[in-house]
Amino acid sequence: MHKTWMRFLPSFISRRLENRHELQRAIDNTGWLFADKLLRMGAGLLVGVWLARYLGPVQFGLLSFAGSFATLFSAPALLGLEAIIVRELVRTPTGREDLLGTTFFLRLLSGGISFALAMLTIVIIRPGEPLTRLLVALACSMLIFQAFDVIDLWFQSEVKSRYVVIAKNGAFLCSTAVKVALILGRAPLFAFALANALEIVLGALGLMVVYRHDGQFMSRWRVRTTRIKQLLSESLPLVLSGIVFMVYLRVDQVLLGQMAGDGEVGIYAAAVRVAEIWYFIPTAVVSSVFPTIIKARESDEDEFYRRLQRLYNLMAFMGYMVAIPLTFCGGFIINLLFGPKYAAAGPMLTLLVWAGLFANLTVARNAFLFAMNWSRVLLVAVTLGAITNVLLNVLLIPRYGGMGAVVASLVSYWAAAHGISFLHPSLFRTGRMLTRALLMPKFW
Image (tube, rainbow, N blue to C red):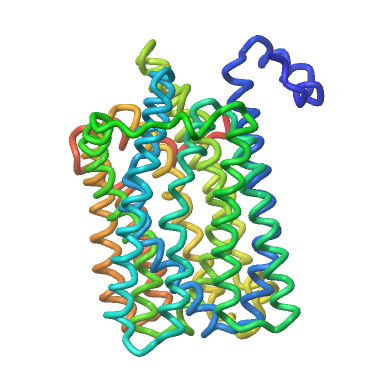
């Protein structure tokens, strides 16, 4: 299995990769994921900035509020099954039709229930705001259509992310082109929410097409009662941790909207858009090496921990490489991209980028917890982060607005990633490894 891209590597690197087929597959898979995210980062940032300038802080804040609100309900819709399904597909590929069919059914059901709960909640907290309800309804369409992401999980288990990249990038480019046309045509706010929903629908259709192209058939999927019981019993702690995770990930924008107004959400969202644009990097790396980490644990525990330490070191290194430059030029970047209306987002960005360092480590640490089947430990960690985030947001937003939300995010990310490691006995070793990575980050 000699990858085409290896021809362009220096000879001393290609020699080290020769005959290391699993590593080649992981690098190839990561490359596709990076290409996907780089395209989204470039085109998404360009059009997103243009959209923010066109809408202004208040309307852009309302659109961001709707997206964050929908995200709060995505965890129960997903049922926390991602890592479980990938793990089971790697371990027992012969039962994939039953596994995929049952997961698809469960996600359709949970997605519909989550959609109904989201709409009921928005009617209660935002009465008399029909536009807000419309935006939330369109944003929440993802809760149903993300059931098709089980196809993505299949390709992850096969380390074939290029198919998913092709499908979802096609949907993304179509949606982006529509947004450009809407901006040029000076369309109203709800049209852009409709364009976001269009991307979700096209992405689902694209996944169906590439799945069939790979020689697979959704018609062979089966729903098994025994599988339902097994998956639900194993995923329950992950559902709870997913709900809590989404709370501490996006509750800041929801609370800002309720306590400080949509304009403050728009300014804060501008800082978040720049700060989080790099978050795809750790996710892409970890999703590619996760299968090899699982295999290392089954064969050699020492090698398992060596790989984990290298992963932690790399995550910390990447976090510093982003945080340090943006600390000094964050204000300039905000003014350059978003204009003077969003100038208040500059100081927010210079502090918020440091949350990315701990977000990187969280992604890697979670890979370790999944490999150990420690889903309850993950729930404890995420709960600590969520409680910290909510309490600090409630205390700081009334006085400091968006900057209070930034401080809350930074502290809660540290608590969930690093702080918990010194409170839970099973994570003491992980705490030492994370501390070593923070003090001595390495690229390799």
